[in-house]
Length: 257
Image (cartoon, rainbow, N blue to C red; front, side, top):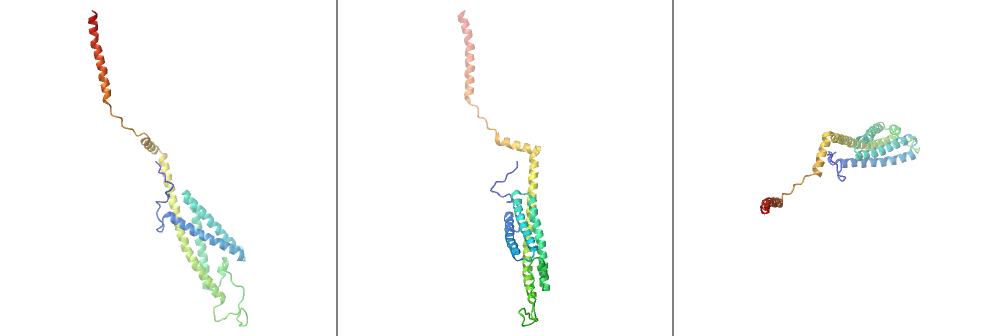
């Protein structure tokens, strides 16, 4: 018969571990990580509405915000319904964000190498100061030519910070992608096992095995009680009465004559 899993037992109890953690715990850790990034993305989207001079960063930030919300919801459905099709949005989201972070990493390294923030500004990052510096010591925007230009120092500073953040996020996103990929294969395996079990139960041999098991469980024969000696005694008494009647008949006939 098909084995049903009790409600208090997780269907992923026997799933292989991921990075030394249980399957369910690793999935929950990834969801917590993505929810934290989603909250940060919400804050960044609101800030882009307030401070961004164009609508491009606003559109990109809100697009990623809706993407992460949709991915988290579908991933929860994948875990609850044990259907691998619901893991596709999370896998796609991880790949898209890794590719986007690689673009940001390249722009940050370009800003550090060139000392100009145009590459970061084109992606919606910090913008270049429009104030021109002067080498006139009496000018309020004076910049010492013997020292690093303020815009160059600013580009190196922001570029280094963004590059470090991108490297950390890329590593974490790769781990999250591995967890989502393992979830996909685990749910796919469980789906195949359930289909094979249902096909086996629907076959003739499977139905006969289920019927035999039910009959054994419900109609177990009980041992019959041992015969009593009273039955034998009753039989002896009836035979004795018949014998006495047979013997008394000739005596009656003799007395009549």
